Length: 152
Image (tube, rainbow, N blue to C red; front, side, top):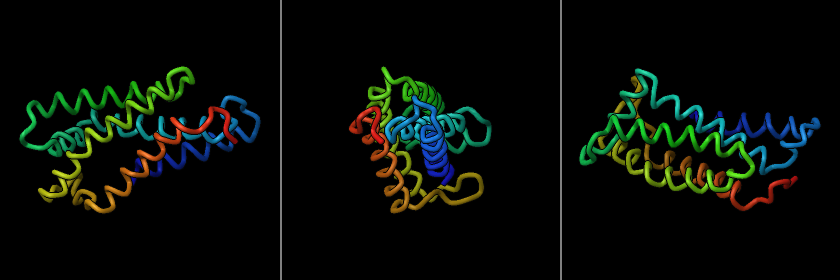
């Protein structure tokens, strides 16, 4: 739920800043870039914090090698993508790369749900709601790709 809140809060705050006269944020596409960057910066930090990192490592499907390395690499890619979203020259490339990353990481969510994992003392998000969230995050990435840079 925290990634969704970060996406929406980042989007709304950036859009309000744009409406208040911050020209680089004047439009839905720039605001969406900030919302996604906020979300990915938040999720990336989990890859490197003690308790959350262990949870993410546990989510990696057992058949994949070196789950700790996979979690580190995906965290770094999320951080690089978040920065890339904030730079107009790289925003579309970053959105495309992050969409591919989300698709690549989704099987870990499926695996975790099927194995009945608990993370931070709570069951993982059930597959139906998790799939809906994933589709929303992919749609936000598509919005960065498809909306004109200054779309109001």
